[in-house]
Length: 246
Picture 1 (tube, helix red, strand yellow):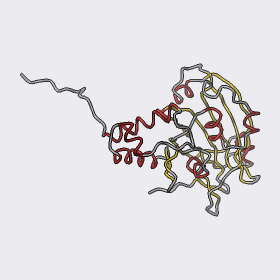
Picture 2: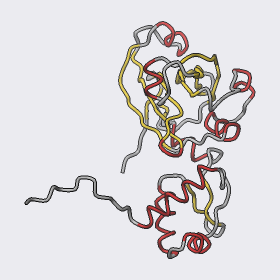
Picture 3: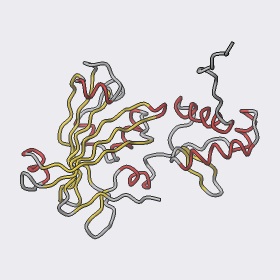
Picture 4: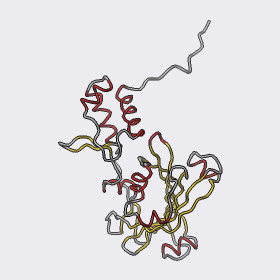
């Protein structure tokens, strides 16, 4: 008799990946917050009952993914959006001269709504769940470069208002991290060309029908949980989207 194949046989991840998952759970629970130093490799090795080399491999992988950052002679820290290098991980807009731009955020609107089908599916919410919608401009000096429409789960950003956005001097992700303990750790983006409609043309100060770059982003926190859906309309008049590969 032929024995049926076992299609549900267990799979095992390498030990260093198991340690990585344990460290990530500690980050997710808030044991070590953004900017905090984590225990040394030897301390973590003792805590988890593994070799120091196994811990080092886990930390190396997490550092490569910008979850942790090594500082020579100081230790390993939880990465934070307060670090200026974080800004250019999530916004890759350059001037025609080739310089990456640190843009000024100008909040325009912020209101509560109920999640429609698309937003609910994208943010893994129930249809009708509370969401927050905010709109803002990103400016290079006084020239508008990006018009953002951003959707957020209402339960995670319970008191977010336009006044809070306007009074904050932090980047948006720094505000989310410090005020709401929501850390954006990775994003998936899709880009396509669109024509400026009346609203985006007026805000970006371009002619209606002008070419724009639409960048749709889903941003995730720990546990691969989606916490932001962003639709950014990029002016292509004096700017371009820059990404370095390899």
